[in-house]
Length: 269
Ligand SMILES: [Fe+2]
Image 1 (cartoon, rainbow, N blue to C red):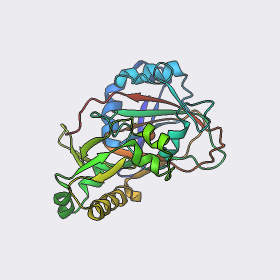
Image 2 (cartoon, rainbow, N blue to C red):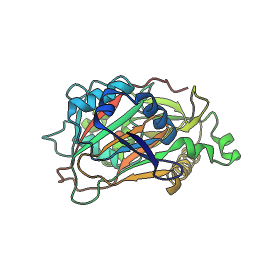
Image 3 (spheres, helix red, strand yellow):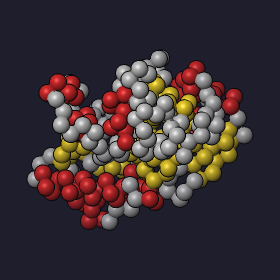
């Protein structure tokens, strides 16, 4: 069984597949192709174990070694996740590893525990958003470079850091990327989000307005898939042509996701 249903015209598809074929990679090439085409793929109520999640992930890329052999616990509880602090930044649109030279290829989550309220995951297709931009805007953003830093996303949740906090954020290197990412495939996506600190070579006023305008454009309803979780759901997205965020949920929540990330394959240029 391998059935695909598009969930909206421009982003998101549901895939129905039998568990064995999913885990052993029978349809890995189709899944990779669909991932780039549809930005987000939903596999409902798969109830994957960590080992099955790793097995599937390795059929479509190289697993980033984080957490327990490539499976990280995403939680707001510092007793569960060392990075609970940083996780609050995920309430804002972002790309995973935007300050890396080669951002992650894809990110995947299995829902283990849900929030009582909120906690949907939203993904926007920035390939489609770029394609639909008026020609004048495509020209306006061509050649624009944006500085990305952890500091920018952390300031959204902690706007008056201590010197120790700011110093800690700045231990993570910042990175300059073009706003319009021209991929080897010939397609172009927008590279922006919460990690965008400023647009280089522009006044702060003009740069901030341009980033704000592009962000608002890219996150219009037409480009966004909202996943309402059930326990056991598996969600996979193409991190190179999207932004994603978690909808607000209580910081006291036990919400728990098991995340695997795939190493980036294409440096930004
Ligand atoms: Fe993320």
